[in-house]
Length: 120
Image 1 (cartoon, helix red, strand yellow):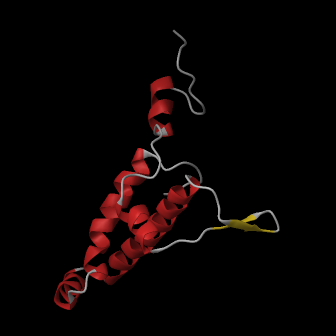
Image 2: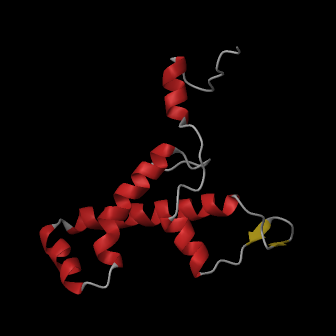
């Protein structure tokens, strides 16, 4: 499940998984798309495509966080001019943010919440 915050390694792994699942629906190969539809449960396929769209939008948001907005509306709504190359980079390029997975840090600390590594 996606949460607000930085794009972490867990999100990237899930994004790659749902991208593979959605690929037949993105390609122009009608026969491949129909084969997937015939072989799968429509409810499961629908859920996977919804997940894919959520992860895709979240990855685009993470990609855009790296750059300054092109403008604002009333000082609170950010405006970005996004072209085809930007979309290719956001969806198919390297992970947009490289941060530690907070779930791993929590496991390391053995406690929920923030983990502060010991100072050296």
